[in-house]
Amino acid sequence: MEELFTKQLSPTDTTHRLTIPAANLGDFEFPMGEHAIDIEATDTIERQWIFRLSIRRDNNPNPRPVFTGQWIQFVNEKGLKAGDRIIFSRQQVEGNGVQYSIRAERRIFNYWVNVQ
Image (cartoon, rainbow, N blue to C red; front, top):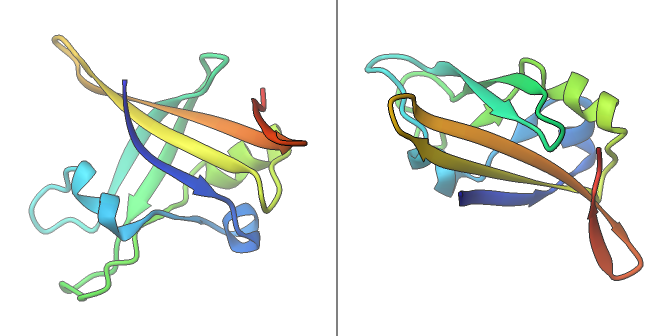
């Protein structure tokens, strides 16, 4: 499993959309001319989530990649708040291409623990 990014959630991430680090945009393949793709990710309890990854149109120099789709539902069902974090990973799967996973964590004292 290759960790793509870890992100501590901001208030906007928990109420509107998750802003993806721009440096990680190259980790996802967009078909030529497309500005949005659906990413299917599995959480720690094997539930499937479909996140819509989109970027600004017209070759904007600041693409500002974001997750929408089921992102807010994921936040609400996990009870996530600003300050919690997510870890987004991928794994090459023989015959199926790429499989993505997402893990939510909350800091309790000095430890990060999984949020189910």
